[in-house]
Length: 344
Image 1 (cartoon, rainbow, N blue to C red):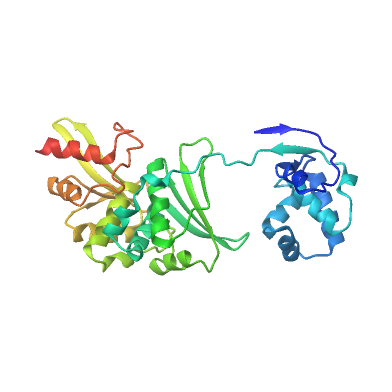
Image 2: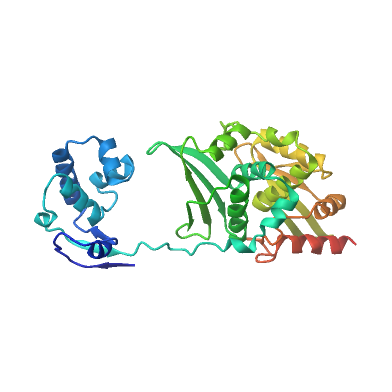
């Protein structure tokens, strides 16, 4: 919540009073803020990198302060004034108090048992399942503004985020940087902000040179092709929870069942097909003129494939839910059981 308040405070002399400034930001407009920042930077004589280090933030952030793209905190103004021996009170700035508490409560990861992970695969094996998550419902790219890598995972189901965050922790001992909901959307995002030397980033790029799955890119699943069956099983189960579906549709002659995995990239879809075949599930390539490649992904309606998918455990996590269609809100594995009951 933002509630405007006008202040002309004097310098804070005690830690107690400083703590009251944590949520105070300049409320003077872009041009005025930029003018003050440029003036103080010029007086300091510091380069962008040295000034950023002094303020404890990135160069991109302080450049945003100067352009007025980010509202500057009052504590930042005090630091700059102290640096150049200027009284901040002389600027007579108006301030606004902004509550910086997280908009969303952190997920309760205790519902995801670490024992289940440890009993199934080793952490180095789960690392490949993490890579599958970023190749399906995520992305990994380098941000030019601060030379850091952005890793994100998207899903409308919080169950998926809780599982993925615990999965990354088990596999790489890494905790998420933020968990947010997109505006005007029901999509939730788990973010990891990491340096270029981060071990998780290096390992993921060892698996696949890119995690972009668009037309000019060349992602790969080769890191899974020679793995033992247990690793392939868990990777495919999780991929099906990310980009897969199970459906029941009415037809003129009874009902039609389909097990699908969405993937428009020609190379990836062939590799997915081989991986499914390796564990006894035979999928056909599903064409779609609406995609850039003309491919929608993989699909099958064979009874044996449904049974085999159920045998290996079905969707992972087991309580992931359907987020659209006729069965929205139901667990995907429950829909899978409905189909198997119809076949029997």
